[in-house]
Amino acid sequence: MLKQLNQVVDYIEDHLTDNLSLEKISQIAGVSDYHLRTVFFHLSGLTLSEYIKNRRLSEANKDLLQGAKVTDVAFKYGYQSIDGFTRAFKSWSGFLPSEVARTGVSKAFPKLTFIITVKGGVSMDFRIVEKPAFNFVGVSKRVPMQFEGVNQEIVKLAQSITEEQRREMRALQNIEPYEIVNVSYDADAKFLKEEGELTHLIGVLTTAEEVSYRLDKVPVAAGTWAVFPNEGPFPATLQNTMARIYSEWLPAADYELVDAPSFSFTKLNEEKPDYAYSEIWIPVRKK
Image (cartoon, rainbow, N blue to C red; front, side, top):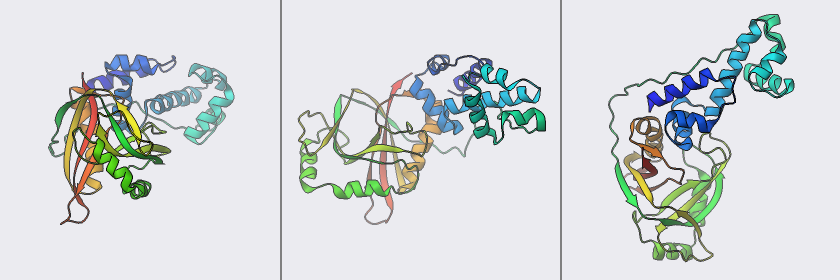
């Protein structure tokens, strides 16, 4: 995957002044658009669109230093108006395009290169599971996106579940894992930024279709799942495992992401406070 990411970066570099299509870029990588965008973000800390914008503005800065007209530079890098380019450049650099040639102020954003970094040889246990079509059923609400720590809105959601809802979920549950699961989907920022909201569901997996008004239902197609068990301080171990899946396992795996909800379950250790066994289930397909 690192080879494909560097090919993507080279392609972007050669087409900074063209109309770059994310669909075309994913074809260059040979993976789905969803997989490429997710892995790129977790390795670089930038969305593909942010990276392209930053590289274009960096090259625009060079052109302005060499005396190019603001109008010519704006249209060269795909901006439809001088005002739009000026706002974007000011937001990115902190100064106006007209100030560059006059004062020599400058900002650069270099081309990315993806390399392999060995981090102590820590292995990741996982298994591959094939599952038929099923439904998540449970109680859901919109909650703030939060990458670290305990999300208090999810805690409140868990506390809101009634005994009637619990009984119905237990009666419907008929497919592995036979646990209460946490499912997150429909994120405002597509899970690529810690901003906005997402929908979080606490519930079970079932092949049943008939569900009462008390529960929400999210259908999931038949497919393949990569399952990552982890054990340790909660929620830090769970969140660290999730980060490693995207930054270490996926770039080297023979699988790519499928655009479907991932989920997890956690079993707290009664003898060790804030210690738990968890599993993270990620929808994937063979490359």
